[in-house]
Length: 105
Image (cartoon, rainbow, N blue to C red; front, side):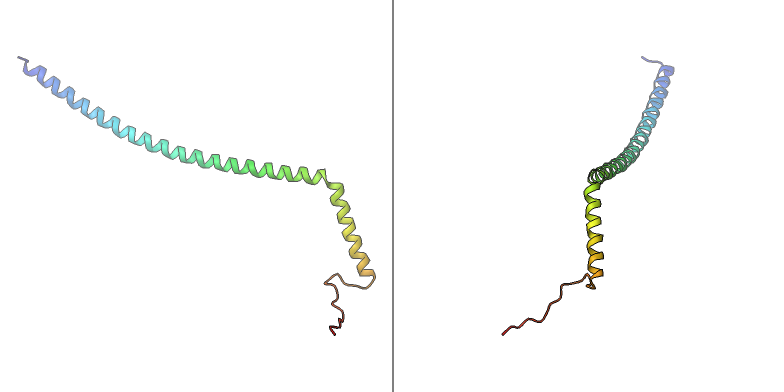
């Protein structure tokens, strides 16, 4: 039959085991919450990085298009300015075309 000392030793050991398991569970809960918060933060920062990357790629494509076609765009701008200057010299405003007097009979 076990002695009283070994029974008390077994009882104290089981109490410490229960306390250790409870603390481990609490620590695991806090660790899970911290991992969830850090995961959300990481996802948010990753989304911002992806958005900035997409924006820079869009601007890069736009600038590449503009610089590739600068001669054509410049020519169109010169033609537009020339046309408006021509219209103003002839005394016609650049608005809607005059309706004129149309005979409906």
